[in-house]
Image (cartoon, rainbow, N blue to C red; front, side, top):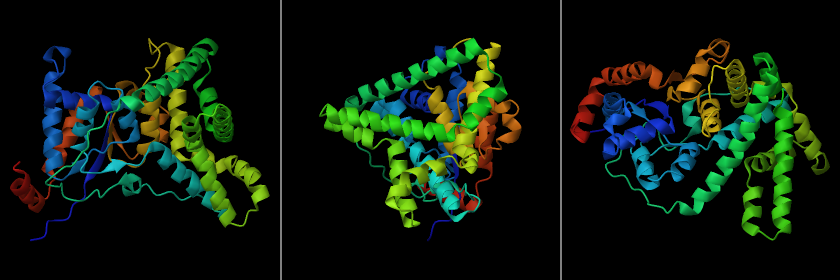
Length: 363
């Protein structure tokens, strides 16, 4: 007898939420740390909606990097995999690159970009498969990657901290920061490309093959190479490729590329909060990952459970009115609303799906 068809929701869970769910399931969560009843109910409702085939919670390379530096890397990875339905998000760099290539096609054809926000475009695996009976995973020794990720995170944090301090000292307005970020697409791309090429050259001169290969696979280098191939396919001569790509990066339509536009708004809102004194301490090392996750996945997924601070920024004007994210936004502050969302998934389960899920998974 064939199984009923499915249409699963896709929800992005912040690393903090994944950690809390893992700690509840493993018994590592200390009741005195607060919100014990809430996280126990979230865990139970997530498991129920997931087994009823109504939702999946894929992982991303943002989760992976944050997990690798955790003391429970393998256990945390498995806990998240068990909520993914054997599906994961495309790397955030790959999603951005696809938006860039879509814009490049429109630029070359002299048309307006027409992006689709079908969530299946950014997923690896089949969203609507019934959950498998067996989950196969592989334990890994993440120590080889952890130091590099910590170093990269510290470098990013140092760069961001300098920016936060500059905002506090110079007190730019929301509009000033937004205008700078919104109009900086071309400069950011060219600057990143030159920096990556310089670092690759330094590695080559130092005879450091591993570092050279790492620099040559930097996301902006991959984007540049794919743009070269695209432009060559449209008849652009080799000698004209670099100026042609630079001209494309400077195309005004790129400002409205979702991943760029959303991050520009988030940076401007964060600057306003820092300048006004509404945020008492500097953003954490995870802020850039939060901005990446919202900017990348927010236009595609059905819901996101994210950091309280970022959720608060998204609730402010003009972000609330102008971003129009597809994702419903939840955080610990709106925890009861998130529980109601999960309960609705349960309540709306089609009767034939519920019956078969109860038979197969013993709900």
